[in-house]
Amino acid sequence: MAEVFNKQRRYTRIFFSDREKAGGVMSPMRNQDESFPSSILNISEGGLQFNQKRQEYRGLQPGDMLLLRRIIGLQELIGLANIPMQIKWVMDNEYLDHVVMGVAFTDLTDSQRQTLQAFINTCLSLHQEEEKS
Image 1 (tube, rainbow, N blue to C red):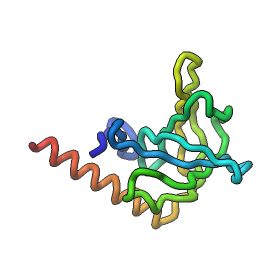
Image 2: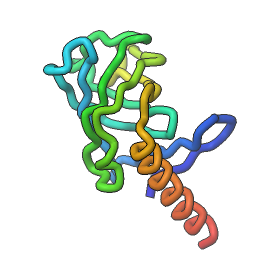
Image 3: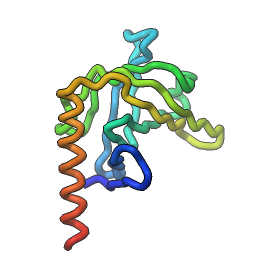
């Protein structure tokens, strides 16, 4: 399954490998009719990190609000939809092919939080099993 990372973080973070890709469809809150695809690099109960191909980058900046429309590629997270998020940081290096952004969830429902917690707990259990083998 995915890699687990929990060093000095408030929430346990689950990283996705190349073979376990997770995608997202997002919209700027100011224009919800406009949506764009992204690759989700990691996720936690507090938010996620994603990247976008440079040619698809829309000039998003820290403080901008987004809506996570849905997650693609992870059946366990299908319940995570229409979640408001705020961009906390942007890594935009002109020499890289992708722009990377970190976002914080601003309003998870109890159901969405439970879905995310169950996913993270499953990943943690699988990671612990792999370490024992």
